[in-house]
Figure (cartoon, one colour):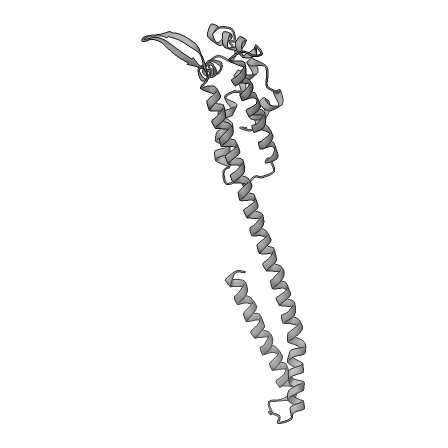
Length: 218
C-alpha cells in the first residue's frame, strides 16, 4: 500500500473523530461529568459510529492488499513466461545455426578447395530468389535436400521442425504485447525469416509457418 494512501486514511480517521467530537460538544456542551453512565454513553457514541467505519476501512484495506499481491503475482508469472519464451527462441536459433553449419561440399578457391556450408546456400537463395536455377551448386543442394535419406535432407528436415516449433511457440504468446524481450524476440524472428525463401525452394515446410515468419516482421 502506497504512502499516500496510508496518509490519506490517517487524515480521514482524525477528521472523522474531530467531527464526531464536535457534534457531541455542540449537542451536550463541554461540562465534564463525573457520572460513569455518562462516560459510558459517550464511549458507546464514539464506538458505535467509529467501530463499523474503521472495520469497513480495514476490510477495504485487506481487499486492496490482496489486489496488489495478485497484481504482483500476475507480473511475476508474465515475467517468468517472458524468460521461458526468450530461452526457447534462443535455443531454436542456436540449433538452426548448427544446421546452417553443415557442410555441403567444396568449391575451388584461390588456395585450393574450400568448404561450402548450408549457410552459403542460404545466401545464394537470398541473392537471387527470382532466378532459381541459375546456380548449379544451389540446384544440387536443393536436389540433395529433397532426397529422402540423403546427407542434406537430415539438417534441412531439422530446420523445418525448428521453424514449425518457433511458429507454434510464438503463436501461443501473441496475446502478450508487453514482453520485456519483445525486441530480442523480434531479432530472432528476423534471423529465422531469412530461411523462408530457401525452405520454400526445398518444399518441405508448411506454408502457414513460412507466412507467419514473414508477417511477424510487419
